[in-house]
Image (cartoon, rainbow, N blue to C red; front, side):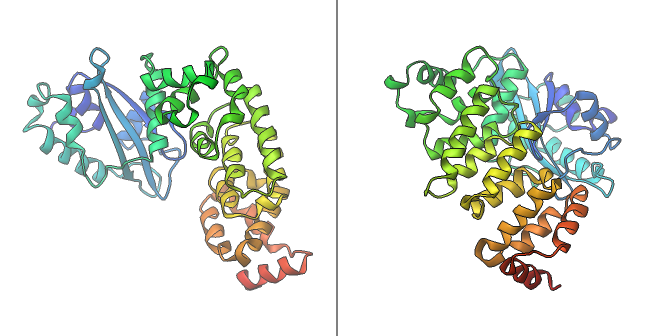
Length: 347
């Protein structure tokens, strides 16, 4: 294998494709090209590891014939420094080369479909959840000034004439396209005005699409209003959890305000809300009041059966450990909570 083919980027560049990469580990974000090249050479740590692995998309873009672009979704192991495991990288490249071309010189002539198919069913290949995949493709189009999808045109028609369109027919890809265009004139205002028409299922989809967005103020206000209504209702917590998740990308004051409201409600003692807080708001557990109320709720939910798994999950975040330890070492005044704490911690 020649030096120029020692990276995934070089494989795609050899086929005259423009390379772009995206971090899919915790949130979807484009990676600076120089940072990616340094990571791929083993010279830079991965910023958002999950279980000592890097999850990413690497794109070979053909802007003249977009249908001939290549998109690979991979997960590769990291070493103890959170740098790329170069052996895993080289093994993946060898597999791709053996499938896509007999040798480096032939890559230039290979069809993009052959390169796309080369990654199918490899051990490093992954298939992101459908909402994340849709969001990724929407971001890719916006980042590269590509036209929006036909599905987005359906969503736009619903926003403009909601009475004449069936809200249940809104396509996922169109909603994903909407989520990356909220700062365009009038878009957030129209979504806010029609938010009451959306079902729980719509909000569960939007939660995944909005959770990492810096939402416009008008949309934050609408989501907060709906969240407050849910918290005082006798419905289950599924919509509460989705609305809360939608706010995961807002500023610290917004997150803390809505976390405390949710955790101090009956809905806060539910698997839906506990899962969203642990999975999306874990960094906010550095706030003592939020941390205390969260673990109180975990203990009260099903008598604390999920307490130890949740603690173990959150203790993988090194910056959280001192806050969790301080919180859980402090006895609860409430007798029931204290009994559950001692039962599960053993002291």
